[in-house]
Length: 243
Ligand SMILES: *Cc1c(COP(=O)(O)O)cnc(C)c1O
Image 1 (cartoon, protein in one colour):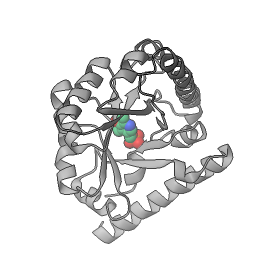
Image 2 (cartoon, protein in one colour):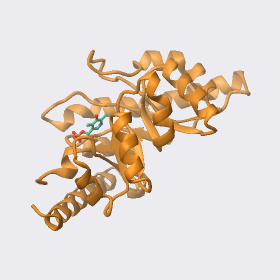
Image 3 (cartoon, helix red, strand yellow):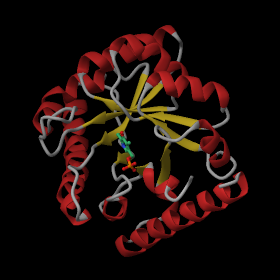
């Protein structure tokens, strides 16, 4: 495949994804502008990402190292970190990522706050929730996040808590993911009420608007949008058919 063919393939894939997102928005009474595609580039060679960057500018990487390298090559794009972050890589992530989707512990969140403060940055983050409870997945359990919520709200000087992220279990039928996505949306609602209670008791506590729900991948993004996703993280579908 030459670069021209590759680019038209990418363009077709993006158009199909956007069309499916638009359909899901219509069915669920949502605005198309409220859903952002994060094109996950972790398995794509840099040449493909460069081609894609003339068509789309929001990318997701799961490793801080590769995100930093690629962000240096394409600094005008927005780079989202979607994979697990070790505490010793926080500086790299804070420097290069527009948003960190994968905050899976209070210790990590506090480290991000400290590094953000040192670098005078307000870091945009999502809290990862393991809704399905699979041992292979990281993230807070729904109970843990409710427990930790007062402490999570407190870190908000150098961190902006913008919502929740989850991954549904792998399944052949995307409908199987729906209950997990719905649970994440409902968890956001209950954390909003919890915030109101915490702030009523302690008015110093900064509020968190929680505008974002990061959920949905190549196999299940349509269902995720129907259930309220504002950020869909799609990798293989974007690059489908490319050679
Ligand atoms: C790889 C990855 C995706 C994208 O997966 P696809 O099935 O290729 O769309 C989304 N989210 C996370 C956290 C990932 O690691």
